Length: 230
Picture 1 (cartoon, rainbow, N blue to C red):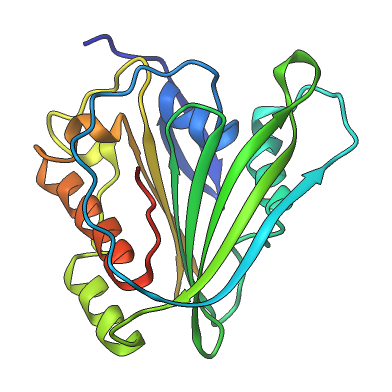
Picture 2 (tube, rainbow, N blue to C red; picture 1 turned 90 degrees about the horizontal axis):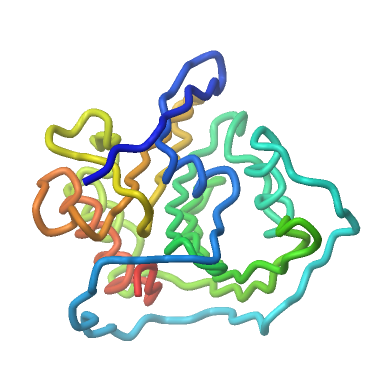
């Protein structure tokens, strides 16, 4: 298994190392070529109470410039109509991104601004010149947990959502040339943490700290009806 080059990225005064695969996901999110590992049969999707379903919305920005690594994350957040997860005083928010290194991806958001809310954004990139992303087609779902927020929150905490490890902290986790990726962002107690899992499907059934992420997205699917991972 070939190792990839890594970059060091500075966020909020802290320095992080990112692999090529996770950097591509975090800062460009899209590639046109994928050689994902073979996936098993999809798990059965439970019913969930759906409050709002917005039809597909296309957002285009007027730019032909090559997007720099430093601005790409902010660009995708802007195109999705989101605010930065950081610097939200007294609020709590969890964002779980999934990308399969094609032109599509999803993000599930759990947010507490006095009351808990959730949303799932499914998006497809629109490319301009030089293969730069100039817009997104997006679809938004807003659901409530079938068991209610107190039960769902307890289950999420029991699964270890606040005790995650990024791939660099997990023994025997090696970065592949390409593959799908999951990134988890958490804003809690006025502190920002990022966990990344490149080549996710390779390790989701073999490494305990990655199995934890799998169990978390299966809980999202069961309680909220959000199918984060195909």
